[in-house]
Image 1 (cartoon, rainbow, N blue to C red):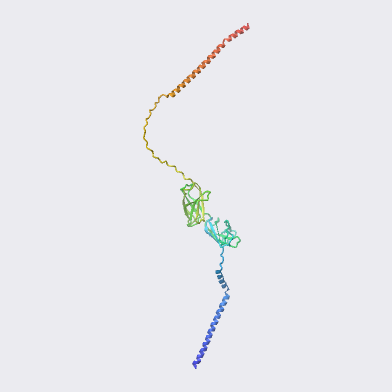
Image 2: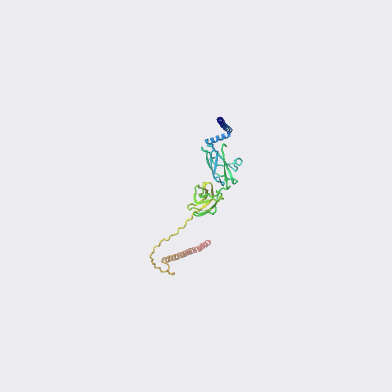
Length: 349
């Protein structure tokens, strides 16, 4: 009896326990579902961020316009190549520079690349320009914007020197082909950049490349470098041109005069002299100082003497004849005078 009654009570207790456990599980499941729904309804920003993340993975977001200068540092007159990306296709880009990154007036100054860059269909452009003269070293800023102002970008350029690169010839000219001159440079890119040289004739765009090169030091200079004048250069005026690798920097020297190479005087080469037979020629006897004059000279002197004597005699005869003639004429005129007197006396008588 007791055993059967206890068994019935155990069965009832077990049944209630099972019902309690089932109800508890159902209640817990309901609470979990309700809490999850409530959390989902109350987390709208989180849901939106997830949706944004999903959207970003499915739809590409357009990037902002950008500019990148190469190189991004150097002295004034550095040749800068500016690359632009992600610009509106076909838009014209205006370029300026400023010492402040806000790129606002009155410090904003227009760069003058000509023509102005225009973005292609892929949104890119490329343009080169020399960095302008500025009053101070340090960071300056390239300001780029479309002409309608809908897109803009800023990039920095570090000005290392307010003076452009220079080239100085330390050797006094003029020079001749084969001679050596020494050059030195300042205000170049610092630290191991290679510099090449060429000679450009005056009033010409061509140039003659030289074998010598120089390397920039950490302070932007290069040490005195000897350069040999090529033997093939024609005489005239030239300019030494120094160019840094990537052609970002260039400098020119003052005018160099190259003279013509003097033409050497040819040395006479002695030719072999044939051996000749010595012929002994008898020496004629020396003439005596008292040797009589030659017959021709003697005859000429005789004729001259005869002519002088004949002339003298002819002159004498002429004088004598003239005197006799005068005398005769006077003699004939004398008797007529007394005859005239007699005739005068007769007339008186």
